[in-house]
Length: 52
Image (cartoon, rainbow, N blue to C red):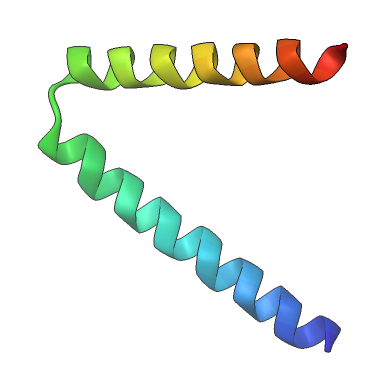
């Protein structure tokens, strides 16, 4: 069971890495920076709502 989880995790990481590399290649650097900033803002808002 642990082996299956490990394989799934590795495959998931590989697929997401592949997707991100393609995603970044298609996007311009500025729009990627905006995307990263948006993700950080969402993370910050989520952590602030769960803190209290």
